[in-house]
Length: 247
Image (cartoon, rainbow, N blue to C red; front, side, top):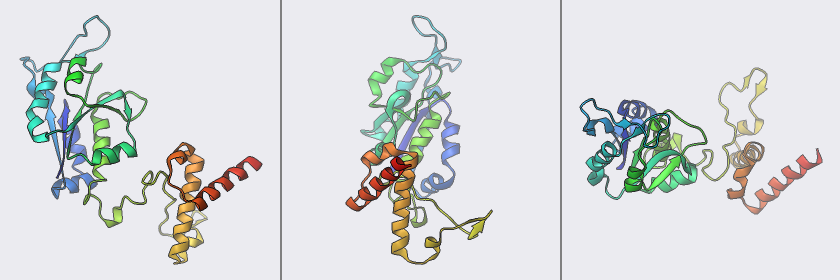
């Protein structure tokens, strides 16, 4: 079983969100385990405060190191040699490659900050990785932690069933996913491509692969640098580029 331990001020956000859909089913089936640890339970302040004014002045409040560290220690033995991820806009950008890397770990600890952040000393003491889900600022780290847990969980064997297979999803091979269609065969004057109704699976696979390359070239050309393409597919991509140049 893969375990996620989330150090947070709002455990209900973690537990409530991840108890649904694919992650919820995986938790019920014992494939993954998610434990939200309330940092506030470890404060020594009688009013349950976990923050204070920053030394040196400035706006906002800073989370104190002691409650965070004690919350971490409470699950350290269960988590084993887990990597501790601090949700931070200053961290390494989270992507599918990092998700695949993290999916190989037996357990992960995710630290969610709030206010102006957390005391630097506890970061130095327990954090192994600072991780960002994008160049923007959230109210707290919970949404980032949920995003990471959801993404990593999908890569854990047994979490996805055959119909939800990861193999053909966007980013699984460095490309965006091909367009999808379902019934009816015509909607608002737009028809499903004939190839998908042909029943010729080899031609369908070829069309889908080409559509993935086209979509990636049009929407996220930066991904093509790391995409796994055959020589034939590279020629197809070069043709797309030449056609654009000739327009």
